[in-house]
Amino acid sequence: MDARGLAARLHDLPALPRRVLIAALIVAAVGIARLSLVAISPDAPIALWWPAIGVLFFAVLASRGRRLAVSVVVVIAVAIGNLLGGQPLELSLAYGLTNAIEVWVVVRVLTGGAAHARFTTLKHIGRFLISVAVGTLLFSILTAAAAALLAGADPALVASSLITSHASAFFAVAPLALVSPSIPLRVPAWEPLVQTLSLVFLTVVVFALAGALALTFLIITTLMWGAYRLPPMTVALQTVTLAVAATLATATGIGPFALLLDTDERGAVLALQLFIMTHAAAALFVSGQSADWNKAVDTLAARERDATLVADELLQLNAQKDDFISAVSHELRTPVTSILGFSEQLVDADLDPETDQAGRIIHRNARRLADVIEDVLELSRLSTNEGSTRPPADLDLCLLLENCIDDTLVLAPAARAVTVERQLPDVPVIIHAVEQDLVRVFSNLLTNALKFSPAESTVVVELIAPAGSAWVDVRIDDEGPGIPLAEQEAVWERFYRVQSPQHRDVPGTGLGLPIVRALVEHRIGGQVTLSSDGVAGTSVVVRIPRAPLSIAPPTQSAAR
Image (tube, rainbow, N blue to C red; front, side, top):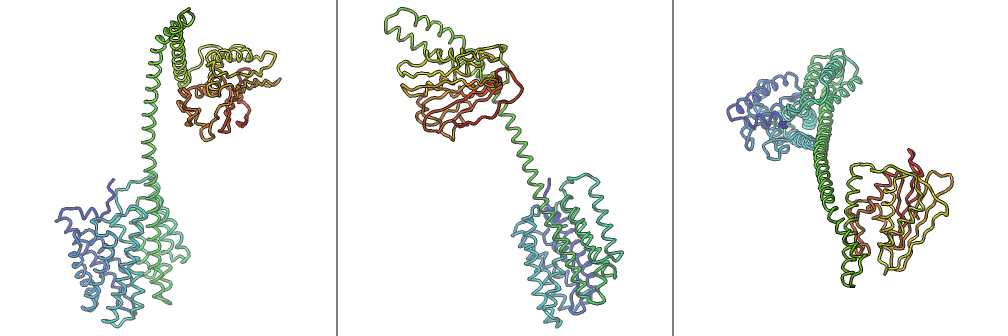
């Protein structure tokens, strides 16, 4: 989308068409100036409203370089317009010079010396208002001094009249040169028509039908509707049309401001100029705010699209990674199983001490690699929400825990002398579940507890099965280094390992706990929680249903 305004587009044209159009603007300004001088102030030789200044601003802004050449032409044009309006030669020249100075200053402050003036955000509109304030104030002082010296007018009266006259003209007319006509319509096609008809209707009611002054607020609410919802060029055209209609109605004795002409002519003119200035300024600010909002919405939408694309790419890469890991793990499983089988034969054989030790090392490392491969394959199945390949069956949880403890102790280094205290009921605790899933859950938890427990410490395994309850709890407590509070949620993530030296010194892949949580929550339908004071000891509680249920497990505290 081309964000350049009409003045910027005129500025970028080739020399000949640019100069012709600038000349046409200046000629139009002369004609408008002539019409503006039909009614002049009874107390000072100045026009009551000066919309020609907005057209001259357009011409100077569209020129190139330092814009001095066109400013000189402005001096001549304004002087001619004043002469045609019956002003004396010396006063006409003085007004031509002050008008040219005003326009040049406004353009200079607005552009900062750049080729184009930006007018797409609320910040740019604020700069425009500041430039108008600076230029209008300087112009009013210079023109008031000229009127006092050359025509004996009251300088204070002249200056106060010029400020509102020129400021309202800048606010109403200049945006036509600044806003882009290319900004698309973001609302339904019927809305601009309804808003425009509403604005025309209210303008007729207020001015043509001599409505009360208090009814003018209806116009500004409708104009703000357009400023917030419609393209800026539409609002600029509506604003300048409203200003012209209000001025013509008042000049012909129609409308709420005309009612004041007989009693307070200057007050009526001032009220009209303030009406134009406030409506135009409000439209500018609301339009700028709407532009900022639309720009923010577009930026967020673009970022959301980019984020979605990145997320899709990451999902694809993650899927490729999972497929690769799964494929490699499957390829490794067969040779590792063979190594494990042969190493078991070496362990069971009657060999010399050196060969026996080598066989046990091979068997231990083969077992460790086989466990890693099984963990990776299990995670791959869980990440694809693949269900268990075995059906659930009635199991004695006490017996299952006993077997898991015995199998884990066999693999634990005997030299560390870590014992397991079993706090299990004397009667069977029957549950309906997949044995393979439960064995993997409790084997991983027991392996972690034994690995991180100090030598000659005790791991406590407790089964809590309240009579009549649909849920049973298995609690495993160790005396290890504990897990820092800040990392207790992170340990459930894949490949994450606690960053303390006590944990880094213990070998592991960071896959055990993620597998436990995935199995418990997604397959078994239970809940697993972990608690530790971060200094010593960790407790893990696994809550599982006695039978597959659709209800969620009751919330339990993670604190020990």
